[in-house]
Image (cartoon, rainbow, N blue to C red; front, side, top):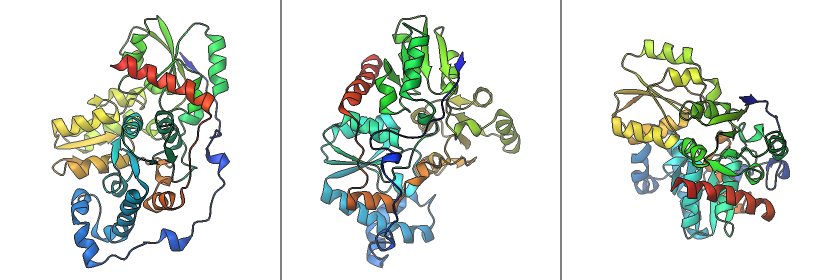
Length: 361
């Protein structure tokens, strides 16, 4: 069962609406250092990580900013959490922790740092704040939202609670803290089936991604009631596109994220979370592969597996791509933009995350 969605804008504490657009100082966002022969030699180990996916011409621009960011991190006792959908120069060259949103938040909670810079979208920064309430959490661009997270509001969840009394509500981590606070427990794409079955009930509400819910339904006998939300990147893929690519590329292996529509998953060789997709490529080492997800992830995996040929259907996330080296540098330099969560909301949302962690161990 799929329920109708709301189409709300990002509007919560520390959100886009709270921070008006800012005119950037061009003197600041230009390279704070010159690309000298000495700098080239110093950053050669970093370039080795990305040389398969970043051209020498691009590196001339990136290297000085990377150097400046890494120096600022040391000065401010800061760490950068780089999501899998960040571009390679961010992911491999300034990210201290790299992975999916929950993995990043958990790593940040363990590290001895004063400042966390979230190279990702707003709900991820909120999750980091939930698990690191005493640390300063910054997001380089406050307009970096998420179509999936904005597809449901706390009011929607309360309406679902009233419509389905006694039915547990499981929320994907790709939601705002305010939505998490209204739910019973969180899940990720990798543990959704386990979380649903851990509740020991005949049916659950699994929100907000309809395609993740449909995928989970194929893996469990628990009745899944879904919400009609979707990731604007993954929902654009089609099964017909997969078959066309397979016909054009003999021997191609297709691996898809469970946020994709069912016909895409049916046409794929493997379906899994971002972490599972990466592990599949590194373990199986296919000759030719297509990752059916945000295309920067393919670039990041390709940097580490140069022996694998990547066929890239390039659906970019416009929200993730608001994060750049330049605004990461500005976030560190000027303390832009701090993400906060109302303490009452945070306490309830944190409990939903903690319940997931407890059920997953």
